Image (cartoon, rainbow, N blue to C red):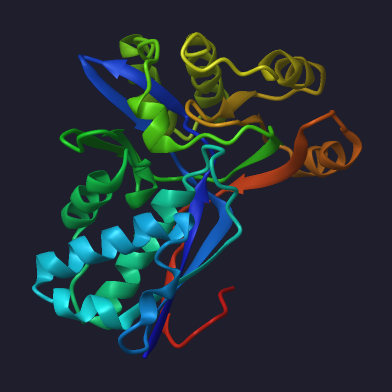
Length: 291
C-alpha cells in the first residue's frame, strides 16, 4: 500500500517576535511543495532511517503511531521524501514534511484530521511554522499554547533572494541568541491588514519585523534587497527570521518575472514565488502527481 501527500512550504514569516512574553510568528504557504510517500513494504524497510533528512519524519511517525496504538506498524512503513523546498533556509521544509507524513498516516489508517494533534506532535519534534493551519494564524511556535486565526490566506508575488547559509531550526533555537524583538505594537495593525487583505500595509509590517530582528539573526544581504525594493517599487520586505531567504513583495507579477531574470547577485539565487490563497495540499493512495 502506498499513500502520497503533496504539501506546500512557506517563505519565512510575515512577522516574528515577542508579544506579551510569548514568542510568536505568522507564516504562509507558497507555491513550492514537498512530496511525501508512505509505503507499507514489510520488515526491514528502515534501511534509510539513518539519513539525516528522514530522521525527524520517522520520529514523528513513531510518535503518531504510538498515540494511536499502532506502534507495531512502524517497522513496516517506509517514508520517501522528494521535496522541492530548499532546506535550512527558513522555508518551512521540515514542517511541510511532517504535515505531509501526518496526512499520509490519516489516509493509511482511516483516521480523522485533528489540528490539535498535528500541532502537538509537530512541536514535539521542533519549533513549527504556522503553515499547519488552514488560515493565517498568529502562533506560539515553541509551545503551541497560543494560536489566533486572523483571516484567510491571500495571493501575492515575491521576488526571492536565497543565500548560501544553511540553518538548522533545532540548533538555531537552542543556541545562545539575542532575544526576539518586541512586536506588541505591530499586532493590531497586522490583524487589520490581514482582515482587509491590505498588501501594502502587511508589507510595511513584515519589513519592520525583519529590521527589528536583525540583531538576533544578521542578514548580510538585507541592505542590498532593500535598495532593490526601493528602486523597483516593491511594497516591502518579507523573509526568514531563522533562515537565509529574503523577498520583495510586489503586486505586479510581470515586474517580478522581468527582475528574476535580469538581477544577478554574487552568492544569491534570485527567483519568483507566489503566496497561496489557501493551504493547497493533496493526498491520494498510490498517486504521484499533483496539479
